[in-house]
Image (cartoon, rainbow, N blue to C red; front, side, top):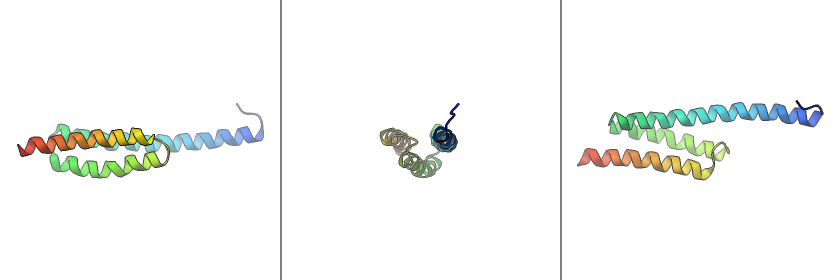
Length: 92
């Protein structure tokens, strides 16, 4: 454990950030799961609503530095592709 003042402060800051990042990361996982479950159930409207909710959450996590911007873009892209594929299958 840290023994001088600045290192102890840094340890406190890191702990607070770790907890904040953990909650943001959990929220991202939950919104992604919601979209995937809606797609598996083949519920187009539900999937589109879940995607609309997920995109800002993922973008915000990237802007906060919890996720890398390319990682966030990849997640959004893959979810969008799943929802669009579901929409295309329901039309045809």
